[in-house]
Amino acid sequence: MHKYLQEVYHKSEALQQKLEKRSISLLDRFSRQQQQLNQKFSKLQKGENGLNFDALGDTIAKLRAGFATKQQQQLTTLQQKIYLPELDTMQTTLRFLSASGKLTNQYDAELKQALKSVNELHNRLNQTETLHRFLEDHKRLLKSRLSSYNLFKKDVEKINKESYYYNQQIKNYTAMLKDRRKAEAKALKLLKESVQYKDFVSKNSWLAGLFPVPPTGTSPSAALQELQTQAQVEQQIQQRLGADLGARQLVSERMNAAQSRFNELKSKYQHVDNTADMPGFKPNEMKSKSFFQRLEFGINLQMQRRANWYPTATDLAGQLSYQFAKNGHAGFGVAYQLSWMSSTEHFSLRTGGYGIRSFVDWKLKRSFYLNAGFEHNYNIVSVNTINAQQWKGWRSSALLGISKQYNVSNKVKGNVILLYDFLSSYYMPRTRPLKLRIGYNFR
Image (cartoon, rainbow, N blue to C red):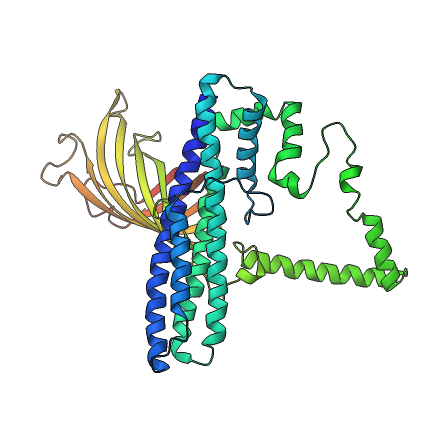
């Protein structure tokens, strides 16, 4: 239980810091932009402060002060402006542990600390939603006030982008709540086996405040009596359109058309939950990701053979890539070569060499990528096997090929890469130009 409470506390504290830093940075930048916009408008209106920047500045200052200090009050169901299932589970679980007295006094301080931090996180998320709605309202206000001035078109577009990317980045941050570590996942699994825990959740969670769920073992009819049944909906359709087969077919066709259109819009704007939040521009998904969210660590393996049918060397490589665009990655890596044998009669394991790598890959279609790279490798060989005058130790490779990627799990991607080395015949001893590599990337 100690590990569970520590994991919950550290997760909520880390997320709070990210939200605070991103929000304060946005407010500072937004304040400077509005000052410049107000000055431009005042000059156009001959000194008249038509945008009422003083009142706007007070609102920005209040929002910034709210993010600079921690709020500890407990929100009610009506006061909350954002709902996250993972956060609801964390809060309800901690309240259950506190109310049931299942933890001994040695964990009491840690429980209070974790519950306090999670409540502060909920307040912080509530503040981010307030800030997002403030930006949206201000954007609409400026659009109506400045619609007749083409001079301010770029300023309004900038605010629109700021609001959209801020909301998307907040969603990326809150995705951290879904990442449950071993102790947290194990604790929740054990608690969900308890009838007392299930009853407590059904009565005290945020979701229960909106849609009350009856206690375990009771009939759900009382909780659902205010909701329409399928039979009631069909009856209303028949009353309005008639009971004949043609009317039903017409309704079915229109519902299918609406569903198809909805799915089309949903696939186009996957990160938008509200039609009011749909951007008036083509979003760049990368702008809402932090530097560390764009990084991927990977490993790959390459088998090489020379004169015989069996592998004579294995290249093991580790790499770090950065996602610079939606469809593109660039990175570097280091490689270590393990030689398996020096001749057909004598088996041995030894260091065969090492090297450095750089690469770029770009998505072509579906799961196929164009892969290009440049490598510099040092091979350790015996001078008795080759002409010592031709051996320089280091050799370069210019690679181009195709890779196929596939999902292993939510956090692991596999890949198979086939490359051609355009410099394979330039160095002695010559190596095979085709290289096959198998690897994994970790998100």
